[in-house]
Image (cartoon, rainbow, N blue to C red; front, side, top):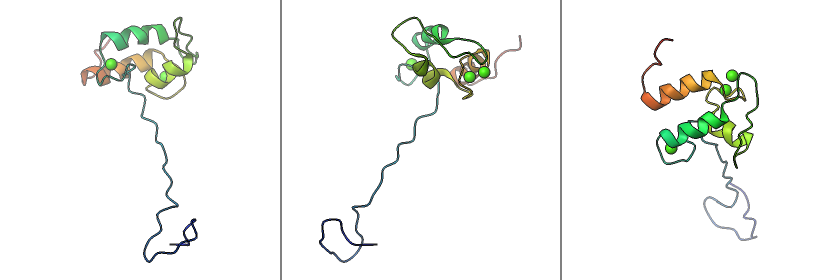
Length: 99
Ligand SMILES: [Ca+2]
Ligand SMILES: [Ca+2]
Ligand SMILES: [Ca+2]
């Protein structure tokens, strides 16, 4: 508890020093944010797919950052087959089938 920034004093708590901290949503493969991972998201994923350690360069209006934000599920700054299998896990809720 401390003095109010407005120079007024009240008994009790001053709530003028509150900070809001944004926590980014984890990358979850739902590129269009409609709450599912369906064909629309998978089409974008295919455009973002780059390869291990390769920054995505999608051809359309998206940027590599957009791809990373939506599809880098293992957070190693690429969109590769590891992310694809994690996406499959998220999408189906079941382990990916053996290859
Ligand atoms: Ca979606
Ligand atoms: Ca990777
Ligand atoms: Ca990745």
